[in-house]
Every structure is written in C-alpha cells, then in structure tokens.
Length: 197
Image 1 (cartoon, helix red, strand yellow):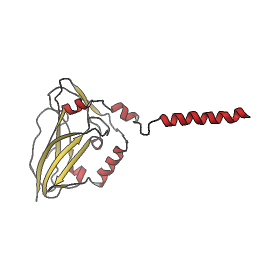
Image 2 (spheres, rainbow, N blue to C red):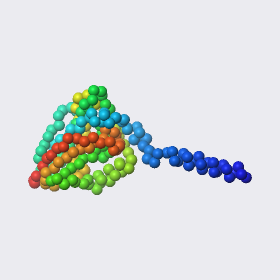
Image 3 (cartoon, rainbow, N blue to C red):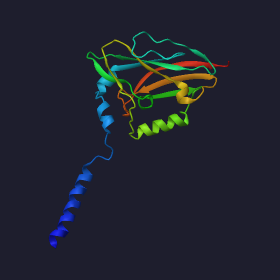
Image 4 (cartoon, helix red, strand yellow):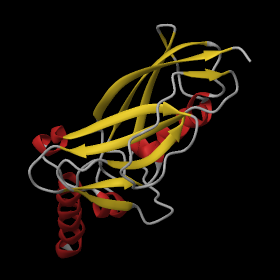
C-alpha cells in the first residue's frame, strides 16, 4: 500500500523537475532551422542601404538602387534594400523569408511617426510572439566582402495604407535571420515627398 502512494509522489516530483527546467519560451523547429548565428560584430559589419523608387527592385542583383525623391498621391512607393558586408570574411544571412518577420520600417510624415495598418500590426504582433510560419524555403545567401547585394524590396502601402500628401522620412530596421529575433540593424535615413495628383 505504501509503495502505491510513493510511486505517484515520486512521478510528480520528477515531472515537476522536468517542467521547471524547460525554458518558458523555446524556439520553434522552424526558428531553430533558420536562426543564423551572427555575432554582434558580424551584424554590425553588414550595412543596409535603402532608397525610395517606383518599381520593385530585382532579387539578388548587384546594380545600384534607383532613387526617386517625389511621388504623386496614389503612386506606389517601393523601398529598395541593399546589403553590404564590410567584414573580411563572407557571412551568411537570410535575404528573404517573410517580410513581416524581417523588416520594421519607421516612417515619419511631416515629423510625426506613422503607425502600421491594422493588418500589418497584427502580423507583426504574431511574429513578435514567436510565431514563425515559413510558407516557402527562405533564401539564405552568402554575402561576400564589399560586394553589394540587392534583396527584395518592400512596398510602403502594404505597411501603412495609401500615403497622404506630405514630406516623409524613413529608416528601415532589419534582422538577418529568417524569423523575427529582435536583433535589428538600422539602415540609412532617406526622405521623399508625396504631392497632389
């Protein structure tokens, strides 16, 4: 009889020890697979250059980005993105997985920060909770030293809705992992104007 009482107590004690040693927020298998480990020094060595233009930029090409300083109301604004590795050794980065995991644009209109659209804010909230659902195989690339690489652009209207007339300033924060990891580098700051039709 005593043996029957001791066994459940012993099992509960072992289970409690196992539960307390499991981290409260573990990485999903997708996050672990695509979490590229870069040291702070390596992340700092990668420069992000952005510019505003009217067309999506080509994937994984090296030409310079087109720049456009003025747009008409209703015209799509694409933000071209170029990575340059300033370290002496090649570095592997996730060039594209899900733009809402990887990018955090910060856009000011006439000096006031704009909030994301409701849809985008919800997608970002889910990614920041640790959700990482990769629907296609992410593009992991090797950045060779000092060879710029253009990665997929983002369209601002997908993030902010139509842009009203005004003067805009933008900085892009970006992770080099395929899933949101909170380790963000900042780009250069750019400005452009949206004028009436």
